[in-house]
Image 1 (cartoon, rainbow, N blue to C red):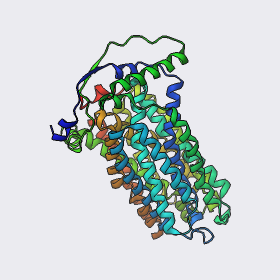
Image 2 (cartoon, rainbow, N blue to C red):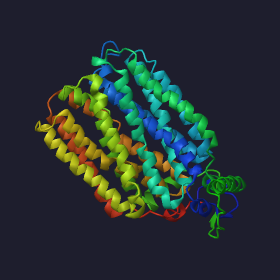
Image 3 (cartoon, one colour):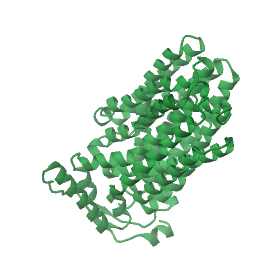
Image 4 (cartoon, one colour):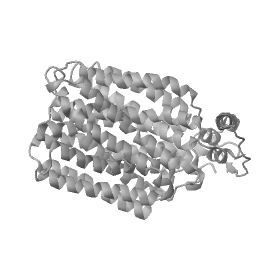
Length: 480
């Protein structure tokens, strides 16, 4: 044990808080948690789709006069900001708590996206996109940690997938907004500015809603705040009993915890690289594969439609909207199977199926077998499976490591996955589009498909059957 860990170790406690939280029936409290915290994914979906939908309009001289490569670079910078934000705020989330950080990160997002709407040239646009990404990246760690720790174990899989799938509500809003705000050939000068401002307004509303979400009792008890954790849990139980009009049963299952104020990087790295090294490799590949697929396709699909299918900028949103709907339906319909059929089998099925379908679309695209409509239908089919697959990557990273490292684990694998599969992909695909012809872009699609299939196969062999199990059963807490 390190000197730091020894210094910050506190007297051990016997707690029943995890069991009390896992035995709760679903009620309005859980709906509040999902609504107030899940907005992160809606906002991210809005950001991604706004850029994808209005990217061609940003190329207009009456807007910012960007090139396709510039739009791709702005998307890559947004992802780089998300990487930085995830690392910084992931560390802070495990150190100072979930609630403090998810309010700070949402506030940063609101300010930055409103500044994006005020951009005056390419460099100001890129700077504000970076800061917006910092806020969103920070949200991922705090939000996924808090949701997993507050949702009952028997429902955690489907709820996580549906929350992560709500990204596509934001994507649909972005697509619809672009149809209303962007005129033919992008001549509505201020339309793209209003598109970015939508996210800021939504964020302000949700910032007020979050004051009703408590700190995670699981975090409190492992960091030496057992009395506060007990009070928070009792308050949650009281709200649940009032909503369900029934008395909760007595809990007998307990856990001995040895709290610490601080868990050092050395402890975290030893867990990930020694005790759970195969879990770490799996989480990394799942994150990288879905990041490459989504960031490559969605940030540049507007350019694909306008450059190869001759769709006018004002109509791009009409083609992105069906993709958003397909992505939204996938987690809703397939999500419950992750709690019944199981995590490992469903991750394999969704990753490999989306990869195989993508190979088909790539072949048809390069042979001119697709129109704008049929290509969109092909992507709808792909993303119906890829959306729950991508959500399962975040679910996997958030539940297969010890509680004390959860936010940092989400951050690390989000960062590494995004760096490997995401940050450069929008710019890469923007360059492939600028090269002209269909073959370069098709080869990019093939690369994404191979990554998805490889991730699915690894999940089948090394995945964790976490369905229905408490977080403490899946991975023993460091403080146990």
